[in-house]
Image (tube, rainbow, N blue to C red; front, side, top):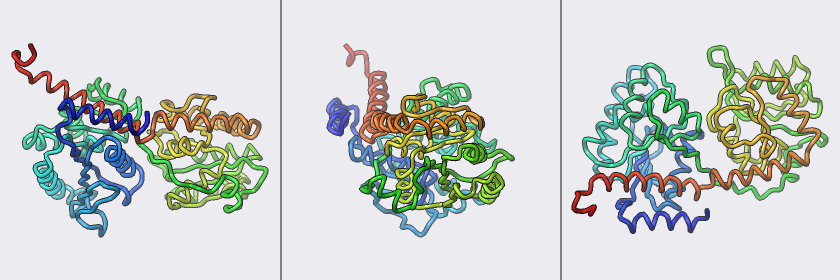
Length: 409
């Protein structure tokens, strides 16, 4: 579906008086350019709806920097509520949330939005009833993260999932979790939109610029280097151990965190330090260029949602080796546009890396198929169209329910 098709969907909905208003209010705890991850995902969705869906996004988010209270970024109005640093404090947060609610209700009254979208359910829990009191707007929850919340927010999440008109999730695993835990069987799959970066350099030019040694399969890995409850989240120890057993592999590790030195020592102890480069945190454009220069992206996570790195690799046509986690299972077909392996299985990871060294042509073909997967699943026009159609269906259903018997005859 191209951009003109998406705009026609929005125009048709407005002609049928389904989309009478065009403002959408987004509530999130972070927003690009202050943060990557889910903040960046929300920014891409807003931009896609602005450009292709005929929606005027307004974002309200905690103010965590010296940015102005109001700004316009890529056509999206961003409202930053002062005092955002309080949100993470266990005491001051109870003062901040009522303050945030006042600002939110003010914007609901001001814009009379078509919908209010909460980035995560626990943020919306106590706010959804307030929104209902002042407006008949649709309430949407678009969950990017694990639906299992800390006990402090569990009651808020139940309230949000129970009262929301539309629940969206980025992976089918999230949808199953929402159904089993919160009894919402009508949740809708809506992955993150992603805009293709402008990288004019060829792969060979980038490899030369960054000094990639010839004769190796260059593997990129991205993620926070942390352990939670003595369990690593990204599975980097399995990747380093597997690389030590495959001499033709050179690791390029991006990310930082308290476990970084632990991984560096592990690489030294296994004798793979000379072909395992740790870059730490890098700007997004630098990371993307390294990703394009490499031969394959490895996602070795033990537990993962919809990885932004996975979407970026698909967009760039980079082959992917990924563990069988939520996002990868949705979009990677084993042997077609990537390779899937069990989480935490070092032996399977060794086999996948050996395959990458033996079959470079097949790996390149997987990368090309991955690019087609991106265009079908994550391109901004596609996501904008799916979002507008979901909103239109719910509004049309609501309109039909409110018609009188005379009107329906």
